[in-house]
Image 1 (cartoon, rainbow, N blue to C red):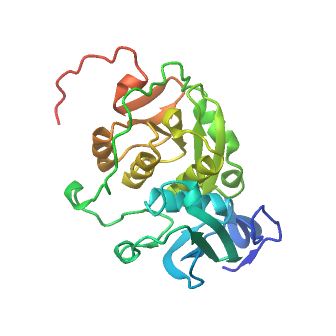
Image 2: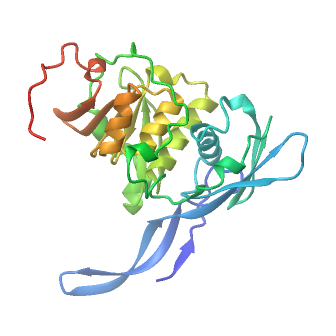
Image 3: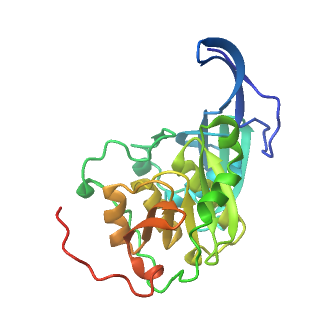
Length: 291
């Protein structure tokens, strides 16, 4: 199988497409034939850090991602990984090549403690962790309890997100994340081959546009894993909605950090895993359930 880069330009400091063209054999019934298909791009991005008083760049992480909204992705990733606490900590983000970004920070963090596990795939942020006790919550604070969404209409959110997934419509290979207001307004939608990358892009967009996360929800096209809850907690997002399921670790951490998790979101149905008080005025009384 061979692929070629599309010539379509996107709004990036270095123009590179989020799509590739690929010749594939398509078999329908008994008629195999070659067709030109569009597939989602998966590219390595090497992120280097430096400070204003030092021209020397230090390597931080190599991340697999889908090109598009690069500045938001890098900003969101720096924030959710705890290297910055506010957008003003970043002086510049420069894409010197399509696969390398140089970030100038006001002050360089201690990178040695962050280097052990910073070669990231596009699939999962902390694959291989076997128990809750093996995870470090990095000093995350619980989200404030008072943030509620009693008037949020969940019935239309799934179709809204599906209609906004232009990359998925063309390739079938992307995940999407939306930032939702308390009244169901879609503030932005980002796509990427990685679920957590799409979340970083949305959080980076919010940081760059001075959006207050404490009354917003994150809406995912896929499942909720540990790393998604971790990133939401860093931004103090009180609720995560998803079209898919939540993992056991995501539920445990969301319970501890006071985050509401909603899975299997569809028309007239959803599963509410944690902190139902944000959505329901009167949650049902708990009843014994066999484990």
